[in-house]
Each structure stands twice: as C-alpha cells, then as structure tokens.
Length: 117
Image 1 (cartoon, rainbow, N blue to C red):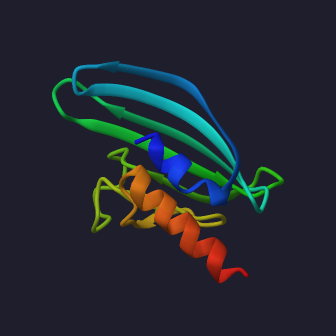
Image 2 (cartoon, rainbow, N blue to C red):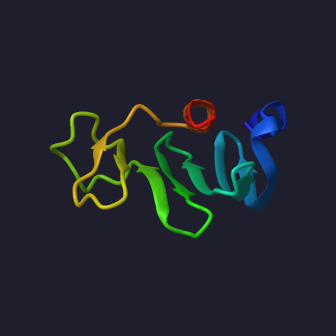
C-alpha cells in the first residue's frame, strides 16, 4: 500500500507516515501528504482483525479549508453508496462516493490535478 505513494511520487511534495502498525492482516495507518499544488491530505485507514474497515481521507486546500472528505462512518444510511460517502465544502449532506481506498483516492487526486492544468 505504501508503495502507491512512491509510485505516484510526481503528485507529492512530501508525505510522511505518522503511525503504522500491522498484526497479521490487520493494520492501522495514519499519514499526511502535501501535494504539488500545496493542498494537503490527511489519511486514516484501519483494517481490523475481523476484516472490517474504517477510513477517513481529508483533502484540504493550502489554506486548510476542505476540498473533499471521504469516509465510511455509518451516519448517512440514505446515501446510495452507504457507508461510503464524500463531504464537499459548503454542503450539509454528503454525496455518494466511489473512493473507498487509497488506490481510488490517488486516482481521484491525479484526475483532479490534471483537470486543473
């Protein structure tokens, strides 16, 4: 999983692992990254021993304001992709999300940055 950041190094100025623990198939990952447009990512991704998963990916503008946030907290059962959803700035209700893992996140970020060129 961490090799994804090396393989997509052209997107990032820096990235750092804040915490990583692994036991069998279970893991806990917390990391931060600064992208080439000075936006920032904060990632939390946990896989528990029973196979369940919890994640939250925060993508912030250089000034710290929200650009996007993806998570799988079960607070929005009416969302079609529940528990997966995306929060957008200025919106009270989240939207559906196809970003459900770090691979999806990096692909979304790459597409976003390319569309802004």
